[in-house]
Length: 79
Image (cartoon, rainbow, N blue to C red; front, side, top):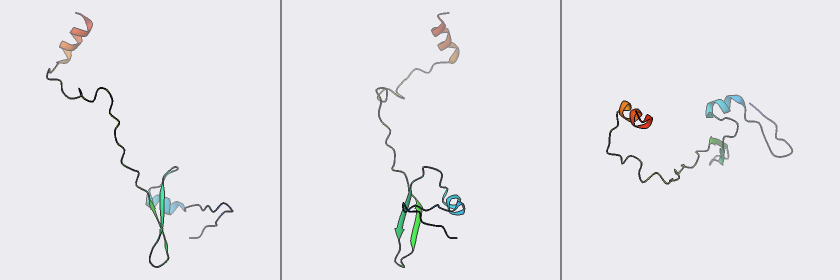
């Protein structure tokens, strides 16, 4: 499988390779050269996302009252 280098230094990754690496448009890839001088391409692992805390995080999961749906709806509807 061969491809041509553009004047901007870009190449198209063949579909068979994209499929094998599960690459989609916008995917990050890593390039490396191994000890034999061969180029290795692999899908880059995205950095772990840290969930940003919001103002409700401290209270989330702390409720001790177990509402039944009927009771909550009655309270909300003011029946």
